Image 1 (cartoon, rainbow, N blue to C red):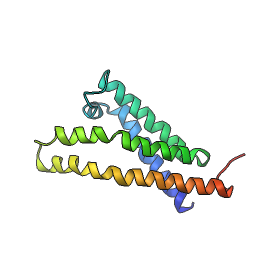
Image 2 (cartoon, rainbow, N blue to C red):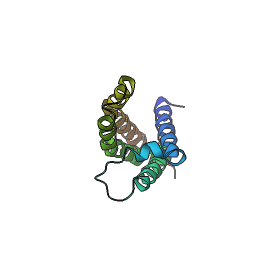
Image 3 (cartoon, rainbow, N blue to C red):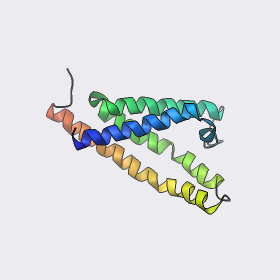
Length: 134
């Protein structure tokens, strides 16, 4: 398996794992939903979990990888306000938890860059004619 395929598979696994957790253990995710969003937090938890599962599937399949990786970049960007909310909500927690919450904020940047890199690599594979299924 090529390095680009392994990288995409790792991204797909991560997204699928997090998406699954949104359904198996939704309560921590509910707490991250910004209050400004309409509706119930659980609805947003389930919607974001479903989005992560759909994006994971798209990234996992070479034919849809480019679009899936672009969607992953958008998803990583869209969840940033939840990470900001977590950091704000946890500002009075013990130091280890505050460090975890604050540490998540800059991690969104490499996730977005990873997704964009994966999209570029998938585009190159498609242009070369090796990534398309007929």
